[in-house]
Image 1 (cartoon, rainbow, N blue to C red):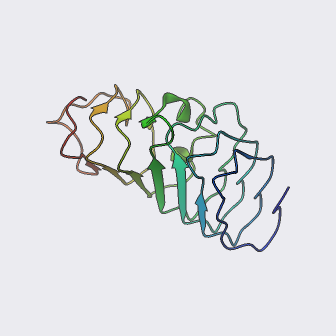
Image 2 (image 1 turned 45 degrees about the horizontal axis):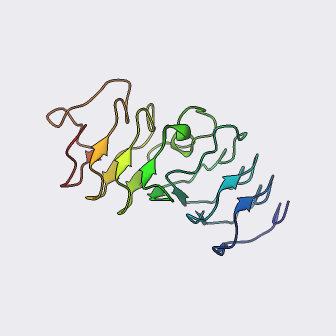
Length: 171
């Protein structure tokens, strides 16, 4: 409950933060950007729930929040999700196994930015995403099966809203 119901508009978490606690930023409706640094190992239940004013979310690709109850619920104004390399450089499958927890399922019409340094996107990570655009950095060389939809893509059938990096060699 560190910032619960506060009027905070921005927060910069230092590299020393390893865990974001239960309800830490819940109902911070004026918070415009949520940036979770690559040094964070875990997030807790409801930690960013009801951050209705948040327009961007930056999150490590390897952060496992599968067992966490709706950490990003009700981010209605979300426009951009930035996925950073994390510690492994891979965007892991854990991000999609619980649809109510995944930031890819909380809003409509946003852009997912897979940032430089991410090298691999695992199977089914963004299946059923509501993104209107997905931009993939040149550093990504492998994209797993069904990473973005219920059907597999090859380079000839990628929809226009998915922009591949030049170095992607395996889909």
